[in-house]
Length: 298
Image (cartoon, rainbow, N blue to C red; front, side, top):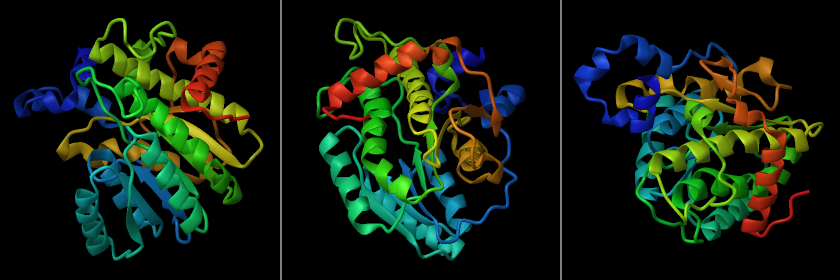
């Protein structure tokens, strides 16, 4: 039942069904971040921060004193959210930057701006994503879900890694999902050109998030930059606050200063699916991603 509801998308649940599933609601909503950590003087970038969990995460980190960059495709909506956050937190250091993860040109423009204009970057939260959509391609010809959820954030992280290293200690937080446990990386048809199933493609992209995190953590070990991933919880209007708790925890909890390469759920480390522990697949996906994006990442 839980898996079916996750795949169908939480927004599809009607109000009555939601009320009748309290146990499931607690499961998907996640734990609570209890860290009192302040982020004064820290700079945070969150993708997809104009709605849902991303918005709530931005709100919380602004309350903690961070300079928060809302990196969003819909700039007008993001500007409205930034104004809300400023008005309600008193933190005026909340800014909007254009980012379309379905366009490598947009990703490069955003990263170039951050590298030029920002003095540092202490936390990168790769939060944005698309889910179980009809088949279509990104501007660069990638299947939309693997393109946005994996390739887009892979490239963004690559382009911002140097500033993160210069700002260390720093953190990279990748928002995955429990459905990665049902995912399979189809190396023979990564772009779903031979056949396409929206839910399977979504699971694949979320597994890619975990494999990317694991391989990234291995490659940047010793740099004082950590990389972790997480299952966020439900994306329903009335539960965004609960759903954002694990993202917030991974971004701020002091006890995670040196923790890297883990998968979190309910604000604690959790077991990953067996495919997420496949080191060979993680390395192979890394190499393919670099070739697809025409980058060299040693």
